[in-house]
Length: 84
Image 1 (cartoon, rainbow, N blue to C red):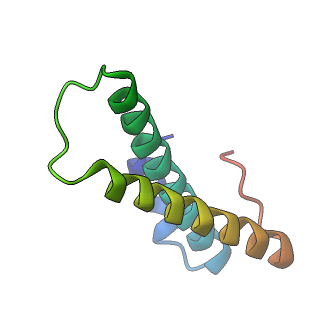
Image 2: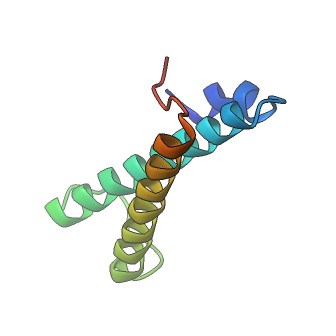
């Protein structure tokens, strides 16, 4: 799934669909950041980040915590977060 695939959900009248879109967008961004950090630490990243890597590690941490909070809320509100 790509960010563009979540546009319809984000524009939905149903808050559960918008919630799912927010979760999926954050998950997509988190995974891209995680992959970039893995490549950076492996020495295979094809560019040099313009901000300190520690800042990007912090961002990844907070994104992960936010995803956890969204999953808990989804469980409470019975929102299906699957990509189907």
